[in-house]
View: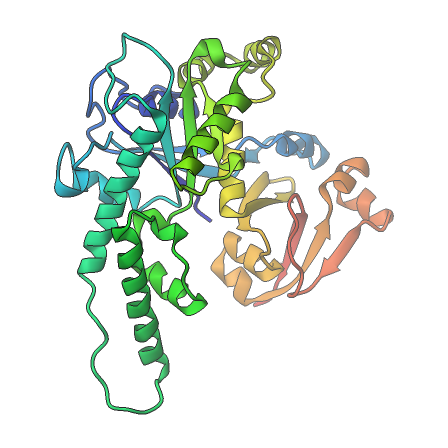
Length: 373
């Protein structure tokens, strides 16, 4: 399963700096002027998972394969982007590739960094969101109504077309009032039909409040709470769990540290985990994702699945044929696997189960799938 995060925001809010930090490399060209990012930078980042290193010696392997997340560093949008201003529609199209949109908003003060937009985090976010709404309206304007038909019972395809057109009408009405697609109430059939429209404002959204280094250890909760309160005052529904206060500049510096140095610094600064770990956890939660693990002599690997996925669906993430020919799954809880030193010890204690097609996967399950021909 592919998890991709599209990083958007006004120019010079810290998107490319954050991208550099997340990749632990200087892959994005972070420059102090608008439109430094000419093409969307794409990076594959491992998801931090301490369980892999714990499992490796138990199964006598040195190969660890974490789950990954793709980050898209998309050039700074400006007012009028939906009409081609700045670098325009080219970059709106890139956002469609992302599973979730990460809005980076400027919450730091630095006279040496060129200020674009109003300087107010909420207004800057609304500038970007408005451009995404206008782009969605343009998409909806291109939709055609269902073909006229004679009276009678609607067939399957016709019902889908009716649901699609009903969704288009409701979405157009809401977006014209400045309401993003994700906030517009649709029926189950309309919602399913609307997925084919690939609307930008229908995507799940996270917020990264880019704070200054002086604020890292003291204002995280206050910064987030204030932002959420101001957003709600603007009639924007938002959860605190979808907001992260992060210092992109500090994260970029930490990327150059080795693990021991990084751990020491985080402890001294009173920070529990890096911005990468916080961001990945928030993205997983926002998209309803979790990981299961496979562990053997060849490798220890984490696989990303949706919460509520069945055992056959989880097997299909490894290979599509595995879902088709699924027989059963040998499952052990992670803590039991570690406590009893692997499959053999866990089995002797009765901690290994054989599960069928109806089993719902749990985060951290260690699994071996039985596949037929």
